[in-house]
Structures are given as structure tokens and as C-alpha cells.
Image (cartoon, rainbow, N blue to C red):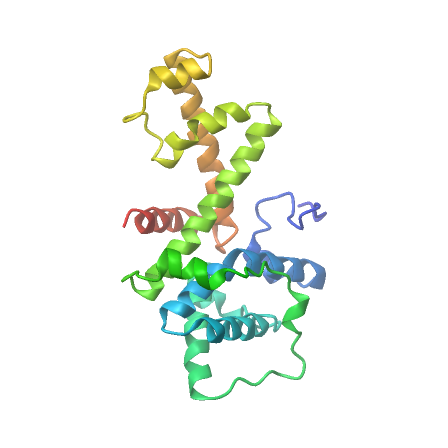
Length: 248
């Protein structure tokens, strides 16, 4: 297995998942993985804290302390107990952290690394975003967290797919069929003839192109979900969960 890493810190084989990289004994690899985790899960975790009834500023402080706690080398030892699912591990770990924080003031261990060593996008309009998107939501906190996790994951998949089509010089095809993809992948409800005409294709060619687009989308989706679970056999279950959450 190759061990050289590329420019974005990921290894060239899908076996090097985010979960595996978090456990990597190489501090550079594990630190980059934690950086990725913080970037990808910052908003869903913030939403979970807010949905638990915590005000904005307290939620920011709580998330800051929680992510700092994750920097301890043994923080991910409990992943196995959550069947290797990073999503479940983070949600349950945060809930436990909130309970402990409520009981007593959080104390930072002397050997713990400062959060400033981890880079994640700070959104100055975080509170407004939450109030706009979820302020009136009656969903349970865990449902809110899962949905935000799903939405961000699907956004990453679409961004990766768009980049692939742009590299192939077929960006217009992706942009034209993206609404079909986002609507579930069926041409039902769409003007297939108009779509084909806009791409200078016949309708049969359009349908073949859509099938290939859906295939590429699923391939990228599987690869992204694989980053968040410990075992290959967990991928399909996570995708089924993702689909169920987004259909609610």
C-alpha cells in the first residue's frame, strides 16, 4: 500500500479514511485529519449544541472547548464502541461533553494542545445562519445534527463531481443535469427534450449521460462516506441512513 500523501493531505488509496488518519501514529497525518474533521463538522456540531438549548456565545465557547478536547491523542479510542461511525461518535461525545460541562467547569489538561493549532472556518454570521435555517425547527437535536451532516456531505460530493466534469471539459453537462441529480436523478418532471436540445444531444444520449452521471455521483458518495466509517461493510448502512434523513 502506498504511503505518500498528496497535496490535500489525503492518501491515494480510499483505505486511508478520515477515521484511519485520525488514528495514524504520524502526528502530521493525524493533525491534518483533525483539521479536516473540524472543517467538515463545525457547523453540524454547532447546530447540535444550539438545538440543546444553548445560546449562541455559549455554544461557540462550548464547541471551542469540545474541539480542543478532541485533540488529545486518546480522544478517538471510543470510536469502536460506536461501530466505527464518526457521525455517531461525534454526536454522542458532544452530548456527554455537554452533560459534564453542565455539572462542573471544564478544565483543560496541561498537556492538551491549544485549539489554535486546528484550523476551521469561523463564520461571523454563524448565529444568523442558524436562526435562518433552523431557528424555528421542531426537530430533535440529533435529527438536526444528522441532517446538517448529510447536507454538507452531499455538497462535498457535488463539488467533487463538478470538479471532475470541469476537468473533462464537460462542465456545461454537469450544470444542465445538476437539477435532475438534486431532484433524485429521474427525468420525470423535467423537459428531457429541452435539456437534450440545450446540450446538442438526442434524448437517448441524454439518458445515457444521466446514467453515467448518477454512477459517478454514487461512486464519489461511497468514497466520501467511506471516509467516515471504520469498515467497508458500514458504508451502505450509512448511505441508507443518509437517504432516510434527507427524505424526512
